[in-house]
Amino acid sequence: MKIPKVPPTLWTERAGVISVAAEVNRLGLIWREQPSVDVGIDGQIELVGEHGEATGRVVAVQIKSGESYLRGTEDHWVFHPDVKHRFYWERFPVPVLLMLHSPDRKETYWVDARQALRGARRDAPQPIFVPRGNLLQHATAEDLFYTTGGVANTLLDVSELLVLLCSTRSTSLSFAISYFELFANGLTNIANSIYYGMDLVMEILEANVGDGWITIGHNEHEFLFGFLRLLFEQDLAEVDISHCLVDWHEREKQPTTIAPLTSRGRQLVARIHEQQVKFERDQRLRVPPYHGVAQEDFVRMAFTPGHYERLPLIKQFEELVLEDNPGVQTSQDGEGRSEV
Image 1: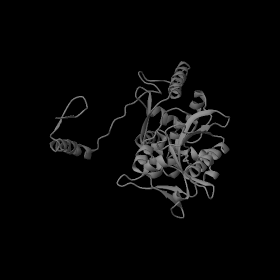
Image 2: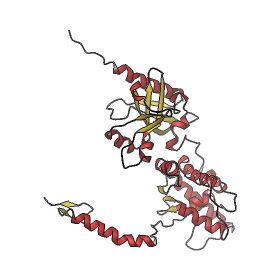
Image 3: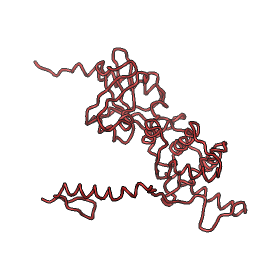
Image 4: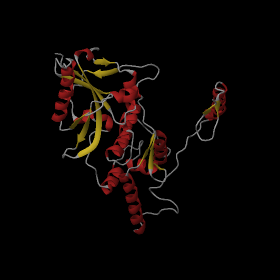
């Protein structure tokens, strides 16, 4: 009589899932195994706050269990994702932690695959390098949730946030800037979004320093990036922290981003308005007509002299593409039409 048999690989696969679930439990986080169709994600981990709050902040997990996955160098394991998973993970809405489990050693190594793919060169598919030092058995919640913006801090009241933004400032005369200046000067889109970039930073510094020297070194860059982290950690704006971290770590530059304000961010803007009215009523602040402290400004692309030379080049390139594709009809609705 023939009866169904359990494939030997099942025990290897389950060993990886069970090990990950146990380590997540050790960290006091929530593990949710994928209950139905698995197309590249085995489960999710939800961050739990220090007082037991379910934060809603999650990372996805893909587990590869077996000694055959643990091949590489002295520093890292080398994993070659297939094309479908490479495409899927890079575009996933939350970080994807790739975990390689060794059943023999009972060890699990991990890396944020989505972050690795987003920061990789695009000219040729590259493997994902999983550092040997990233041992899940030694990891903390802060490690696993770093690319989501870090662990959830206690959310401050908007009045406390206003004081924090104003008091977080550089004391250096050659780098005179505060988080409040970055927030208030970055408001755009009818004060419903916030812009951040080095051009904004330099405009504020030049206004504050005047004819003096401006100094920006390692500590100053850390200070500036901390502003983006604060926006995210205090849930003030929907900052794409993953892409910002690619700029910060891979490209070694300050990110440029426009992020919609959250409801808390808009509450902070309203609180600034209320405080401005109070200061005006007490005759401690004089506000010019049609101006305000928390007021939008406009963001636009600044064309350099060289860009004006590119304008006809871009137009000519467009025309040549259409010339090489004569079956495409131009339209006014944003969709190209091909002749049948």
